[in-house]
Image 1 (cartoon, rainbow, N blue to C red):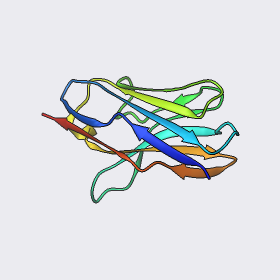
Image 2 (image 1 turned 180 degrees about the vertical axis):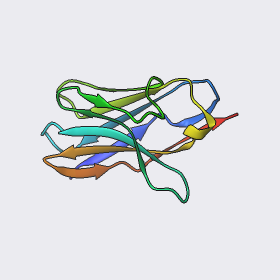
Image 3 (image 1 turned 180 degrees about the horizontal axis):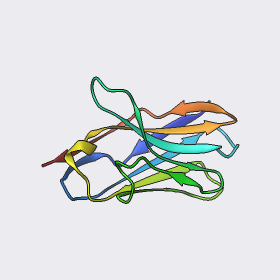
Length: 115
């Protein structure tokens, strides 16, 4: 059974940085995609960053230039470096992995950016 474990959330002041990490266990198959999403109360979960098995990345305009997703070659681990954080980045961040075209989610980690 595939499990995703996230780490690295916390409280940071505006302008600061945080790094989130996620490791998927339970599968020897390389993930087609790995990514990060975030959600705030009353809103839908939204994409923050995604990376495929070839290293192609994509970001929404809201985080482009501030966030960087990376993936360790040959492993189902992914990190998200978040710089120049803003209060509006406050959310629960979820790791996602698509392995053999099945989607798996982590439990979420809270990121809070104070103004």
